[in-house]
Amino acid sequence: MPSDSPEQTASLPRFGFSTRIGFVLAAAGSAVGLGNIWSFPAQVAENGGAAFVLVYLVLSLLLAYPALVAELMIGRYGQSNPVTALESVPQNPAWRTVTKLTGIVAVLMICLIFSFYSIVGGWLAGFTLAPLFETTGMPSAASWLQTFSPTRNLLLAIIFIALTLGIVNGGVQKGIERWSARLMPLLVLLLVGLIFTVMTQEGAIEGVHHYLIPDFSRINETLIMNALGQSFFSMSLGVGAMMVYGSYLKRNANLPNVALQVCLLDTGIAFLAGLLIIPALFVAMNLGVSIYLPDGHLANNDTLVFEVLPALFNNLGVMGIPIALAFFSLMSIAALTSSISMLEVPVACLTERAGLSRKRASLIVCIGVLAIVAIVIAKFDPLFGAVVSLTTGYAQPIDGLLFCLFAGWLMGRNRKLQEIRKGWPEAEKSLFWKVWPWYIKIICPIMITSIFILQHQS
Ligand code: TRP
Image (cartoon, rainbow, N blue to C red; front, side):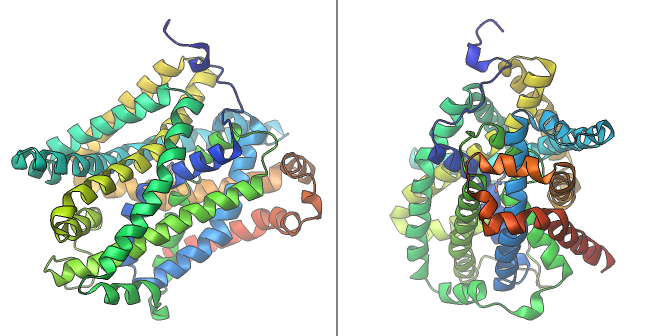
C-alpha cells in the first residue's frame, strides 16, 4: 500500500510509548473495558455477590498480577510480536516449537475474543446512539438500536470493528496512547458520580450489602473458576495482548511496578463498576424489572447491564438522557481501547512475520473476524456462549499458565533478572525478586491447575 507512512509499515518502531504514564494508561486502557462493566457485575450477580468479589480480588492479586509481570516481561524481552517473542524464550530448539505453537494458538484465540467483544461493543455503541435518536425525534430508531435482533447486532458490530480498525491504523502512539490517556479519568469520575446518585434510590442499600458482605457458603469450585477466568479476561492475560504492549514498553520501565499499577487500576475500576451496577440492579428489581429466574440464576447473563442501566437512567428524569449518553460513550471508548489491543496482536504478527503492511494486515484480520461475527450472530444461542466459554474459561487461563511455565522454567533466572533489572537496578535485593521467580514457576501453575481439576471434578 503506497500510502503507508514508514511508521505504519512492517517494522513498527519499538519503544512506541512516549511516556511511562502513557504506557500505564494504554495498558490499563486494554485492561479496562467490557470486562469491568459488562462481565464483572454480571458474574457478581450470578455468583452470589460479595463472595465472588472477594475471591476475584484475591485471585487478581495472587494469580493475575504475577502472570501479568511474566507476560509483559516476555514481550519486552522478545521485542516483537507474541509468536516471535515466545519463540525467543527457550534456548533449546525443541522447546521453541512448543512456545511458538502456544503463541499461534493465543493469536487465534484473541481473534475469537475480538469477535464476541465486537458484538457486545456494538451493543454499547447502539446504547450510545439511542439517546441521540431519542432527542432528535426518532424514537423508533432509538428503540431498534436497543432491541436484540440479528440485523442490529451485525450492523453495530461492523461499526465497532470499523472504529477499531481506524484507530489501529493510526499507529501505536498516535492511536492508542492518545485515546487512553485522556478519557479514562473521565470514566472514573462519571462512575463515582453515578454511584452517589444510585445510592439515593430505593433498594440501593440492599444492593450494597449484597455487594460488600460476603456469604462464605457461596464459595465453591465454579465460583473460583469463574473468578479466575474473569480476572484473566479483565487484565487481558493469556493471549498475548500484554506481551505486545510489553514489547512497546521502554527499556527503563520498571516492570513489576508498571504491572502493579495496571492491576490496581483495572481491579479498582471493576470494583467501582460493581458498586454502581449491583445496587442499580436492586433498584431495578424494586421497579419491577425481572432480573433473576425463580431458580436464582440470572434471567440473562449477556444483557444484564443493558437492562439495569437504562432502567436506572430512565429513573433520573430529564438528566437521564445526557447521563446515559455520557456513560455509554465513555464505555464505548473504554471498549475500543481494549479492542485495539486485541487487533494489535494479530496485526503485529502479520506485519512482522509475514511482512504485510500495517493497513493490509489489519484489514485482513478484521475481515476474518467479521466472518466469525456473522456466524456467531446467525446462531447466537449457543455459539456466543460457547465462544465466550472457550476463550475466557479455557484458553486464557491455560495459556496464561503456559506463559508462567515458560517464563519460569525455560527462561533462566539470569535472563529474567536482567530483563527486570533494566528498569529496576536494585531488583535483585527486593522481596519481589525473592518470591516471584518461584511463584510463577511453581505456585501459579499449581494453583491454576488445581482450580481446573477441582472444577471439572464437581
Ligand atoms: N481486558 C479487557 C476488558 O476487560 C478485554 C481485553 C482487551 C482482552 N484485550 C484483551 C481480553 C486480550 C482478553 C485478551 O474488557
